[in-house]
Length: 420
Image (cartoon, rainbow, N blue to C red; front, top):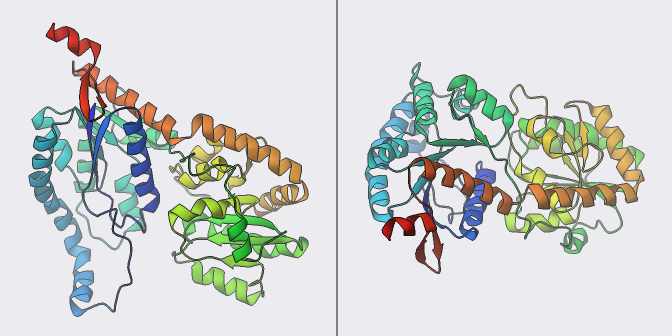
């Protein structure tokens, strides 16, 4: 197959880093199945890394003020720019199939594909209307516009893929599909995240040496359970002299609260904040940890499929996570990790103490986690699942899949028979 992939994420290496990595790794996995994939980042450039911004100008301040009212009209108008650019891309690439990511206000790729006769698989990784209304209340929106565009995309896609059963149920209630929503979870790059990675350099950098290290990867936002993380620090450290915390990440409104708590309780020597770590160095930081945390709070709508949980597991680490949504399906409690009811601090403390006291159990559970990640949650496995979806769509269109070998498109047997 020849596949074109349109992705509309913004701030690729900031707020959207998890989804950026997913897009890159998934398309690489599809390519490794023998298919030709062309990626087009429609709003940002993945090669651009975040820089240091100067003081805001008067224009920036005015733009921020007007954004409340102009955000929605601007986002809708972008579609005409996208249509012009994407028509040229599709005419040039002539793909067998288009994979396009669901994004708030964007309808350009779906509208074009329907008119050009190109089959479309929709990557519906998040409830974009819900997210905009929940997390960006600063923007004014007209009733029905957001919902209408989202439902248009969900209705007209030839297949729609989501990352969790919770998300599939949500979309089925909003826009039922006769063929339903295909659930393909996120995964991990098991060639880069695996149990053989050494964490010695990281341990040396932070003077961890013989300590038992409890780790956390992520930004310090409420939805990552930072309040739960803070509540665990003092009780665990008071009871266990040989334990330290290694917290890897940057950003989020709760980081100042976390830093203040560490200072107030004089925990600076035992709670290490690394700040931003490039993703290519995340594996060695996980390798330096003995126990890893995913203490998500009790959210009313937990639709995520957290990449970091699969990366933890792939590295052979024992995960202690909240029993929520897709996480509860990925982790076999007390066999490939520990599940705790969200917000149950005593439950978290009990699980952590059990693992701190039992190195053999940590090893056993870590090995089971790595095997589970390798078998079910590698990007290679996810790529094969996506290929199956794409091939099923092509079959419904009466088209044959074409495999790319050494840059040449090889016809599948069914297509060859038509020509003979």
